[in-house]
Amino acid sequence: MIQVLFFGPVAERIGKRQIDVDFHPGLRWQDIYGELRAHHHEAFALVSVVAVNGKRVDEQDDTLLTDGAEVVFMSAFSGG
Image (cartoon, rainbow, N blue to C red; front, side):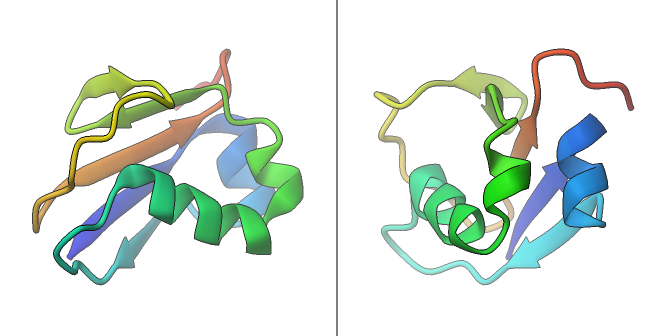
């Protein structure tokens, strides 16, 4: 299971601070981003910071997720 956390205005627009996503081999944070963005376009238009397991990542970071990973999406000036 992948724990996905949302902070600040991103969480407000989604209406949740956390969801769980089923893990499968080959899953990347970009896959989760793309799926969620399709359903929450307004919220994901605000995303400017993404972190995986506490480390900030960018679009070029193609690291595969492991079961139990944490992915965080937030805007640049999010509060808790």
